[in-house]
Image (cartoon, rainbow, N blue to C red; front, side):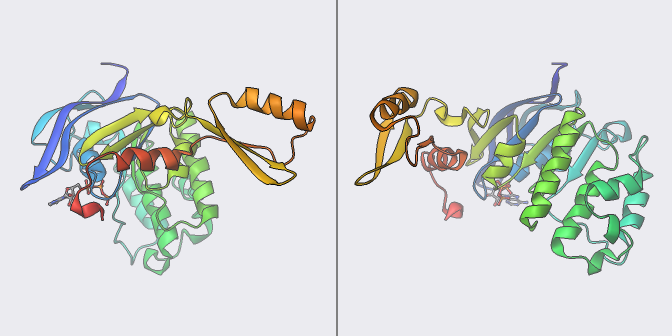
Length: 286
Ligand SMILES: Nc1ncnc2c1ncn2[C@@H]1O[C@H](COP(=O)(O)OP(=O)(O)OP(=O)(O)O)[C@@H](O)[C@H]1O
């Protein structure tokens, strides 16, 4: 379909006896940010590598930007990749590497602006080998976006980032998404998925076990809420599916400002852990 950036049907991959990806049906719209979550060994990287054209599927169909992934220049020109393993070009500077890769794209971004936007401005002329792990990861991100891709694959992009760098990265990704870039992101950080993704796909044992907005995943919106407040004899808690009515009742009993009032629904992490616990675990996940 023309409005899909990624469209897979029954996509499968096995390694020996091990089914890494098991008949995956996945549709990602143009301009969408989709976060792929799942425990170690769930099949996220294998999925991404098939969509990037690095791994050949054993079964199923896929269209990525309307075509089968390939080494064709015209297709690669529209794709950006930040893989899980980092660049090994330690003896060159970030600017040299990014400038050189920019030449292989037909309409690259400006090199200096790209280095600035990933937060490498003041480190751009240092050898990559002398940079910290987090800064080296930013070089990977710069290389992923230098071609101004329509579709960007990010495989665990912020591993090793400090909280400040992670926030700066989120702003960068949100900006790319606002400009219409389609983004497929794998991450183990639930907060990252919640912050960035339009929809979240949860994989376990090679299968898709849930796909929804971060707000609605696994029935989160409809889940029972916990209302807690400070009473004279300590903290009280009530489970309810009508928290607004409970708060109104508490206001009538305790006054307009209910002391220590909190209304909590399951976090994305609570929901994710529940979804994963409901799947059959494999040995690798322990
Ligand atoms: N090249 C390979 N050869 C053999 N088995 C592989 C290969 N690549 C992946 N696998 C297996 O396929 C399964 C899925 O692995 P994959 O790397 O896709 O999971 P993942 O969800 O990306 O995990 P992680 O969160 O640890 O990156 C695992 O059982 C893994 O051991």
